[in-house]
Length: 356
Picture 1 (cartoon, rainbow, N blue to C red):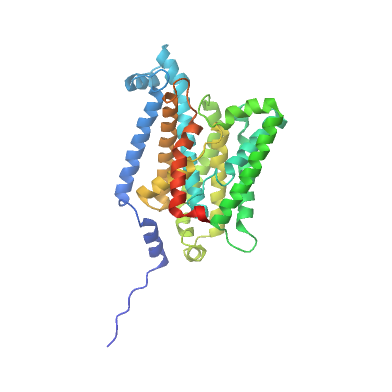
Picture 2 (cartoon, rainbow, N blue to C red):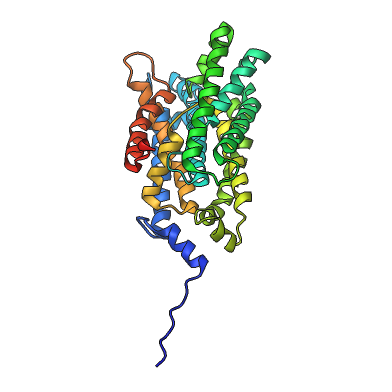
């Protein structure tokens, strides 16, 4: 008597199951959740236009946004808060997307641009430009920030890969910590030796949306757009790479080419975002974990959700920073750290990486 053979699952089917496991809803549900998230982002953006030292009603803020009037409310909404809100949305989305890409590239849940030296590379390049070239405006920092991010990424990758072994998550984190420590020391040395450098750099390094107008954003927008487009085009390939080099090769995906293209996207996103606002930490670390809990590990959904969630987080942190202090306001870079540190500690303890 013959025994019926069981069908052997194809690699493509296995890959599809791996990226859909652990989701909280089907494709239609995830699409609906994305629309709801965009609606929440719109609500937070309206709060950014209305809330501050002079709080306006949503109706007033909406009216002043679309009707130019010679009123104090119009000056506040169009002259101060609109540019700040738009910059927050774009930079937040870029940082969230870069964090998700970094974690997918390294297969390390603790990876983000700040932990792996990319942000420190941008800061080192900017402080060099301030000291040696006399740069003073954020719009002048763009190319140096991109160059610094690229060089730091290459250095961390080379140190973290090793000569004969594949890239190890632990080795990569250690390499990132080492590069970040060296570059931070370099930045501190230059700012301590030059008072003018310190005066210019301290307003940038804190990470802020204050006085970031559309001219600064427009200079960075081509790089933000290119990085975003490249990242979204790589989402399917990143799913295959997550299954391992052998499986990705069987699925027709070039793992090395995908990793290089992903690194280019991360550099564009982080370098441009950091040039606009200064270093803002923990957004790229925390947001992908939240998005992954909602939609699972499928990069085709994880990347857009990370963009929207990160924009919500950054704008919400900025709004809270305006009202939490008795006088003045706390910059958004401080507020994201306050929110992100507990999440980072939770992830480290859960994964037991503190013992490595």
